[in-house]
Image: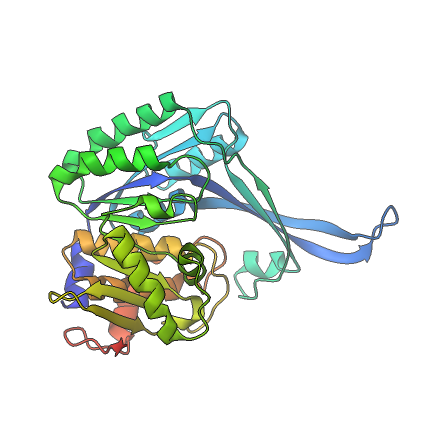
Length: 352
């Protein structure tokens, strides 16, 4: 498929994103001395910033490229939850699928970064600074049965008009085996792709989804295999493909690109390795969100799996050059397509 054609068809595709919404907070500052109270560094705050993370970042990636994101998740009744709603509203993203649970906090990840604030806020420098610490405020307990039922009602109401589903799973308790099973049961009659960015807790509950997009470490951990060579990755991919009865599997490999696993009509395994498309790597935070968002949008636009993987790899290469959970703009992705090292109707492929 021609990638420019696919790119044009991303516009208006309606994608349901089910998962753990997260607030990503950044604190930049400087460390110049040791505290007299204890042998620890004194961090002097220079600037702070918050953004959308987790499933919310997947949603903003969908929206950034012209898709219609239907975000469904849970926040706490707290200041962080209010900030998240405000950010989503400012991006014109619907918040009707965001439910408030007063018994749990809004998942928040705060990253403390030294000697980076001035350069990042002036936009003159791309150095991400020295990452000192990450502070997590969250609950990993499963949501209540009543809340799960409420989420399912919202999902079912959105299915008739949707083109794809994403499970953005970060092991924070919103997604569990029962919710997965019920969503899959309800989605069957609509014949739309269901794509999953999995974590460990529910990894083996996603049987019969269209595809999953784990990173290299998550895939190897799931099958308890230690991989030292790319040829050995074939074993990992085949085990996951078989056990979950997937149509395809996309394993992201950070700076090494990604690998796409599919079954040929004769039942044999077909593996294609895609090179990375990143000139500068500033921050890999949220790159997986971009990959699953663009991969799903492309499939919603009826792209084949390989074209969808290439498009998602190009988008991932764009966002790793930015700080924090970022998105690729339509202009950036179109430029990447036009300047790519592949031929749109005859893509270069690495195979094993």
